Length: 58
Image 1 (cartoon, helix red, strand yellow):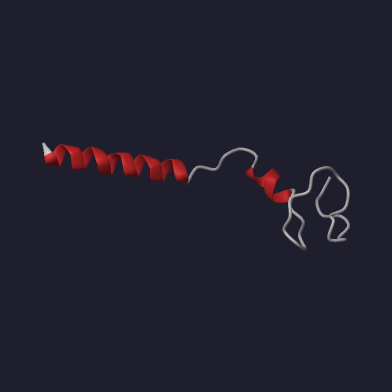
Image 2 (cartoon, rainbow, N blue to C red):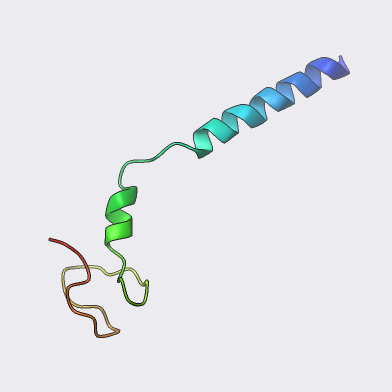
């Protein structure tokens, strides 16, 4: 009985590890929305508050 519980626990941990390695859609877009100079997220197409212009493409 204890071996069965440990086996199920290890299988559950392995499944969680597989889901943790997945790439979810939109991650590249979120990374592109950061300012290259200070690392803050920018909303809209204007310049960052740190003064850098052209913080992202398009």
